[in-house]
Image (cartoon, rainbow, N blue to C red):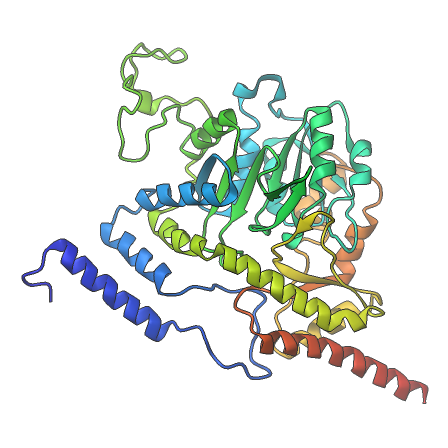
Length: 456
């Protein structure tokens, strides 16, 4: 097959065949029929992702390489941040972001065991897990409805002399009130970690400047799991404009080492064998000097290759999410007596991850969800609902140690019992959106008809 061809010619022939294969067999345009399964989220891709993936595989470098460098640079350009570290998942991104703030290089501002971090219980567990695993104390405050983000009026009540940071997610793409939260953090010299895993592409007008979420706090995170705003299968990233935090996060991502050489690179600093570190012998190999207790959280270059192609589509992905959200919102406005529809945070333009709804009759949530699922419409709860009600907290609830709660988390509990969401991902067609909206209308029409029969 490759006789009389050099390696580059053979590679070009393979990639041309991959492009044709992807176009022919991975065409995602299919006609929708009522009752067909409508996922809450899915991958949206074309031949470029598959060509990049195979191109990387042909190199067989496997670990972080040229595509990783390219992805980190391009994501930084997209977001307008100086430093980006690609990691193997969004959960690892949250772990790395949090652990970065525990470094001794931060002096008195370093988070130590027993220090407190303000957060919410209405979200995904890996926003909170790193705090508990390290020995910090999450302080849970309530959220608001219909914004589904932190109730900023409770921030001062959550503050103590042990508070070191605030770590919050932008709920399903809807930014929390960054102006109030960041001003609070600045006033009290606290770190702000933005869990941006569900909000890539969302923007917020921060003191008159439109900025991407994830870039206003000290450090931000993203997830590239398949349902998210873009994907590379598994994957995530951590980003910051702070050079000290950047140094720490790359060290902790790469085993905790002090050396800044990339995989396969040696002696970038030209001082590999002539420095003194800790109590090690003079001239100890710098590639094996460790300044932090770190991890190996790198992604593979094959994942990064897919991410490079996906990142080109991000502006269009965000645009489609906004359009789909608006379409559903308009189609469901007449159900305001039955449902609380989601509302964007003031000064924000969300790149929505999903369309959240809270029922006004508590008995409707499970019935409506099962009705929709019966019609092939995939639904999701708002993740943990109330995280501290889960089995993972059983021992802490019993001892009343390891976390604090501000107030009664009334809205958090309501979300746990009365809220669900459906998808708005870029692959949604108008036919699918109409079917979902009509199905919700059908549920309430049937409920009304059943009530009239009962009262007749």
